[in-house]
Length: 228
View (cartoon, rainbow, N blue to C red):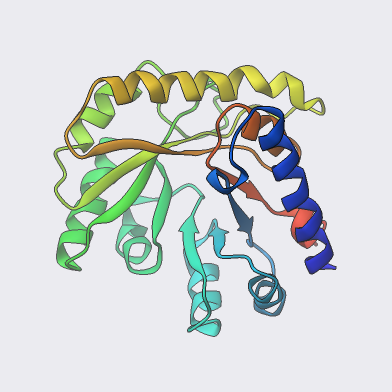
């Protein structure tokens, strides 16, 4: 099932990229593996998945330990508390959900202790929904200026989770706004900051995200099926 699902998702990414003249290789597929068993994750890796996204530190640690040695890069995509920063730096190649200077400074401290430069994305609450984490669009540039002074962090781009709609087209303005924000930040030429990654789009709307510039799409249900 997973292999067939992956084939279909990849085809849809390729078609979305073709519609807007993008190279499909410029879009990376991240399989959201929260609540999914290590066995199913191993099946996805065997089918060619190389990026895995987890929301919870303890669950991720168990899977990473169980699948040690497999060709996968693990990303943290959930809300991160500062008291879990040490573990996040230990476990993850990219943290998508940095949304405050306090969290950034703690990650910087832990990365320094681990002799690591930690790649991160800044999470932007583009719709300013009270139920979601993320810095506001207006405050993001200043936060990034301040985070850029953290020597053991590397800002690689932005992430967002737009409002949920049954109609993917309704989400397009939020993806477009994130892309435009990334362009404005890139034009600021902040030392040590790149806007090479836009992490946006999930099972219900990833094709629109690709059309609006996503470089990482976070897809779970369309790969693993409905969660139990």
